[in-house]
Image (cartoon, rainbow, N blue to C red; front, side, top):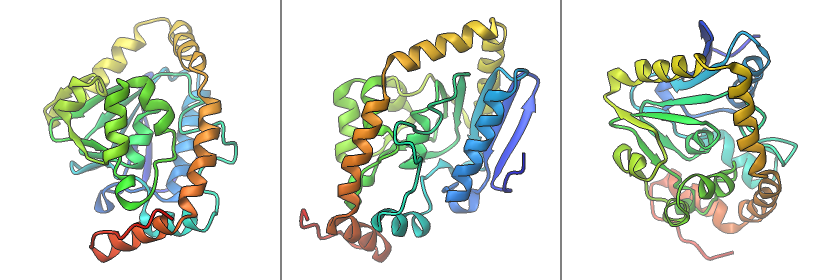
Length: 257
């Protein structure tokens, strides 16, 4: 498996560690990196010797700040496809082995959407979490509307989606978005300890438990709906104005069109 330098794939015994390695760009994702992440997790899912994965990122500033806007916005607002051709799928939706997220900093936009596809989450004390797309006339169309209202209480999921305001690691723990909050230097040891604990269990039973839990949610129809409705937003004047205002460092002037 050949991956770009911005995605690292390592194994530690029964554990695969996938690292987003673009710290100079706050670990923002390119389309190439998205494809590489899919390839890494496909390799993990298909390797019978690997039982748990840890997803983390390089540096201490950001876990992932979403898509690189220079690449993503022109694609999205022009109607080009960015994401899965099969609209019933989202990131990690076909991975039935456990995924632990080790969040080492800002986890926002597409980073949060990726987090929604993981199973256990460990956060460094300085980590932050948010879905700020609405502030710029956009919507997080990577599964957030479908996954988060099922993972945390409705009112809290809607607060994240509708205000665009971030929350800190302690608040994320309080609302059940993450399992543990630890000092930064304990992040990976804690994630590895959780992975090791899961690896002591029967791998077939663990994988089947996750598969039942995920498939019983019936997320596919919601993913299709999200994609269809989000496309209308990305084709709007507001979706062009928001990113333009962001780039020009000013408040957007939305018209609702």
